[in-house]
Length: 100
Image (cartoon, rainbow, N blue to C red):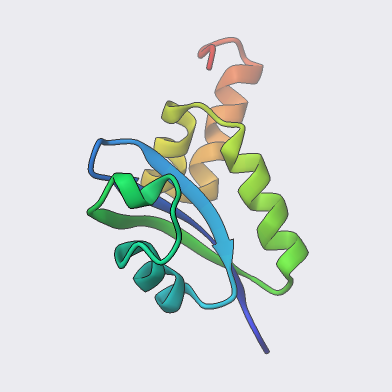
C-alpha cells in the first residue's frame, strides 16, 4: 500500500513549511538541494519536525491545508505532542482556558 505524507519542516529562520508527498525521503532531498525555487530554497538548512502517513493523497492534502491555516503555537503543539495534543488544546479552548 502506497502511503502519502503530510510533513512540517523547521527552516533556518525558525519558520515552518508544511507540505505533502508520496515519497518523504525524496521530497526532503529535493528541498535540501533547492530543486524548486520557493519558500524553503531561501531558508536552508531545513529539518523535518513532523510527519504522518495517510492512506490517500486526498487525506494527506487535507491535513496539509488544515495545518497551513494554524498559527505557530498550534503547529508547535502538533510537532511536540501529535494529534492528541491538538485534541487537548481544543478541549482547553472549549472550556475557555486558552484563546489560540
